[in-house]
Image (cartoon, rainbow, N blue to C red; front, side):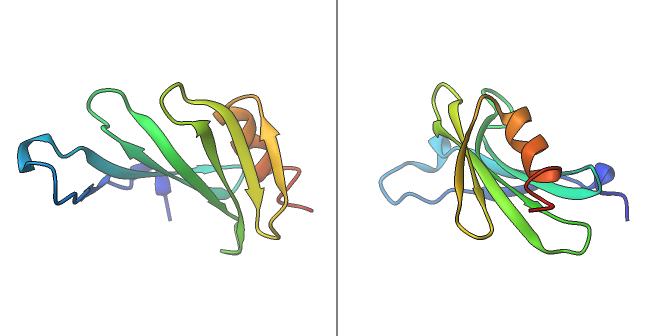
Length: 107
Protein backbone atom coordinates (compact mmCIF):
# COMPACT_ATOMS: atom_id res chain seq x y z
CA UNK A 1 0.00 0.00 0.00
CA UNK A 2 1.52 3.32 -1.06
CA UNK A 3 0.50 6.07 1.36
CA UNK A 4 2.31 8.75 -0.64
CA UNK A 5 -0.51 8.85 -3.19
CA UNK A 6 -3.35 9.05 -0.65
CA UNK A 7 -5.68 11.96 -1.40
CA UNK A 8 -6.28 14.65 1.19
CA UNK A 9 -9.41 14.15 3.23
CA UNK A 10 -11.34 17.42 3.64
CA UNK A 11 -13.14 18.01 6.93
CA UNK A 12 -15.05 21.18 7.73
CA UNK A 13 -14.96 22.58 11.25
CA UNK A 14 -18.42 23.42 12.56
CA UNK A 15 -18.80 26.40 14.87
CA UNK A 16 -22.39 27.58 15.38
CA UNK A 17 -21.25 31.20 15.86
CA UNK A 18 -19.39 31.38 12.53
CA UNK A 19 -20.86 32.06 9.15
CA UNK A 20 -20.38 29.33 6.56
CA UNK A 21 -18.10 31.56 4.48
CA UNK A 22 -15.43 31.91 7.22
CA UNK A 23 -15.08 28.34 8.47
CA UNK A 24 -11.50 27.08 8.14
CA UNK A 25 -10.78 23.95 6.16
CA UNK A 26 -9.12 21.03 7.94
CA UNK A 27 -7.44 18.15 6.08
CA UNK A 28 -5.48 15.05 7.00
CA UNK A 29 -2.24 14.23 5.24
CA UNK A 30 -0.64 10.81 5.40
CA UNK A 31 2.82 9.69 4.37
CA UNK A 32 5.34 6.98 5.24
CA UNK A 33 8.56 7.60 7.20
CA UNK A 34 10.87 4.75 8.24
CA UNK A 35 8.11 2.21 7.48
CA UNK A 36 5.71 4.04 9.84
CA UNK A 37 2.48 5.80 8.86
CA UNK A 38 2.57 9.49 9.76
CA UNK A 39 -0.77 11.34 9.69
CA UNK A 40 -1.04 15.08 10.24
CA UNK A 41 -4.17 17.14 10.81
CA UNK A 42 -3.67 20.49 9.06
CA UNK A 43 -5.88 23.56 9.32
CA UNK A 44 -6.20 26.02 6.43
CA UNK A 45 -4.13 23.99 3.94
CA UNK A 46 -4.47 26.53 1.13
CA UNK A 47 -3.01 29.38 3.16
CA UNK A 48 -1.05 29.00 6.41
CA UNK A 49 -0.95 25.19 6.57
CA UNK A 50 -0.72 24.97 10.34
CA UNK A 51 -0.42 21.51 11.85
CA UNK A 52 -2.85 20.92 14.72
CA UNK A 53 -1.38 17.52 15.62
CA UNK A 54 0.02 14.36 14.09
CA UNK A 55 0.04 10.66 14.88
CA UNK A 56 2.47 7.85 14.10
CA UNK A 57 1.64 4.16 13.78
CA UNK A 58 4.24 1.44 13.31
CA UNK A 59 4.44 -1.01 10.39
CA UNK A 60 2.32 -3.43 12.43
CA UNK A 61 -0.44 -0.81 12.88
CA UNK A 62 0.42 -0.25 16.54
CA UNK A 63 0.03 3.33 17.79
CA UNK A 64 3.50 4.72 18.53
CA UNK A 65 2.56 8.24 19.63
CA UNK A 66 1.48 11.72 18.68
CA UNK A 67 3.12 15.10 18.25
CA UNK A 68 1.88 18.68 18.28
CA UNK A 69 3.04 22.28 18.60
CA UNK A 70 2.28 23.75 22.03
CA UNK A 71 2.09 27.12 20.26
CA UNK A 72 -0.13 26.51 17.24
CA UNK A 73 0.12 30.09 15.93
CA UNK A 74 3.92 30.11 15.75
CA UNK A 75 4.21 26.34 15.18
CA UNK A 76 6.77 26.10 17.98
CA UNK A 77 7.43 24.35 21.28
CA UNK A 78 6.84 20.89 19.83
CA UNK A 79 5.80 18.02 22.08
CA UNK A 80 5.85 14.27 21.58
CA UNK A 81 3.55 11.94 23.54
CA UNK A 82 4.21 8.20 23.31
CA UNK A 83 1.59 5.45 23.44
CA UNK A 84 2.42 4.83 27.10
CA UNK A 85 1.84 8.51 28.00
CA UNK A 86 5.43 9.72 28.29
CA UNK A 87 5.91 13.30 27.05
CA UNK A 88 9.07 14.75 25.50
CA UNK A 89 9.98 18.15 24.05
CA UNK A 90 11.17 18.35 20.42
CA UNK A 91 12.93 21.25 18.68
CA UNK A 92 10.80 20.94 15.51
CA UNK A 93 8.11 18.93 13.76
CA UNK A 94 10.78 17.02 11.85
CA UNK A 95 12.56 16.04 15.05
CA UNK A 96 9.26 14.90 16.59
CA UNK A 97 8.46 12.66 13.62
CA UNK A 98 12.01 11.29 13.50
CA UNK A 99 11.93 10.42 17.22
CA UNK A 100 8.57 8.63 16.91
CA UNK A 101 9.56 6.70 13.78
CA UNK A 102 12.96 5.59 15.12
CA UNK A 103 14.03 5.69 18.78
CA UNK A 104 10.61 5.88 20.47
CA UNK A 105 9.11 3.33 18.09
CA UNK A 106 11.46 0.71 19.47
CA UNK A 107 11.04 1.71 23.12
